[in-house]
Length: 114
Image 1 (cartoon, rainbow, N blue to C red):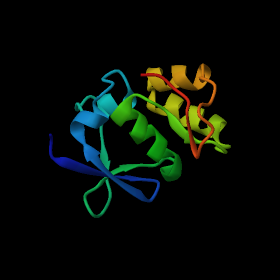
Image 2: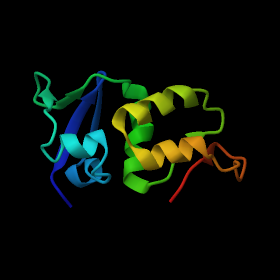
Image 3: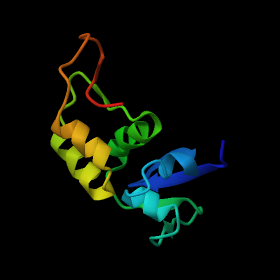
């Protein structure tokens, strides 16, 4: 396990590991945290990304599991797709383009790939 990293995404703080952020090296996050793109820090020293902090939770969970799990009544798929495009996470984009039918009907539905 690598040392925890805290990100400030649009005012929401998230803690994860470098290995999670680098899971998809061809993505923007992979490039940022491999040193290929510049990073910005907030006044507390957290990495700062000026994007939708609420939707980043789904981005980060996808990075952790390679599965896209959304609430059954999730209504922001178009916005999430824009975030996935921004971060250039191709496997997530593919999951959003080709969702599986929801099963079982519960609080969450698994939308994507493994």
